[in-house]
Length: 144
Image (cartoon, rainbow, N blue to C red):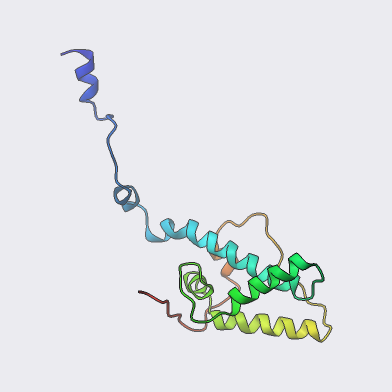
C-alpha cells in the first residue's frame, strides 16, 4: 500500500456533513439562543427608540419613535420578527409590555421623571435580560 492509500482510509478523512447532522447533537434551546439574542436586541432597541423619541424635537428621532410605536402596538401582524412573535419566543406577555409602555408614557406626560431603557454593552443570555419580565398569559403565534 502506498502512503496515499493509507491516508485516504484514515478516520480523519474529510466528508460532507448536513446541517441536520451538525445540529442534531445540540439541544433545541442552544440552537435558538442566537435567534433569541437577536430578537431581544430588536425588542430592546424598539422600546428605547419609543422612550427616547416620545418627546423628541429632532426629526430623525421622531421618525424612529413612530416606527417603534407602530411595531410595538400593531396587533395581528405576522412574520418571525413581528412584535407578538418576538415576545412569545422570549416568553414575554405582549399585552403586559404594551401596558407597561402606556403607563410609562402617561407618567412622563404628567411630568414625572421616568428613566428610559439603557443599552447594555454585554448581554450574556436571554434569560438574564428577561427575568424581570414575567409572562402572565400564553401567546398565540400565527402559523401558516
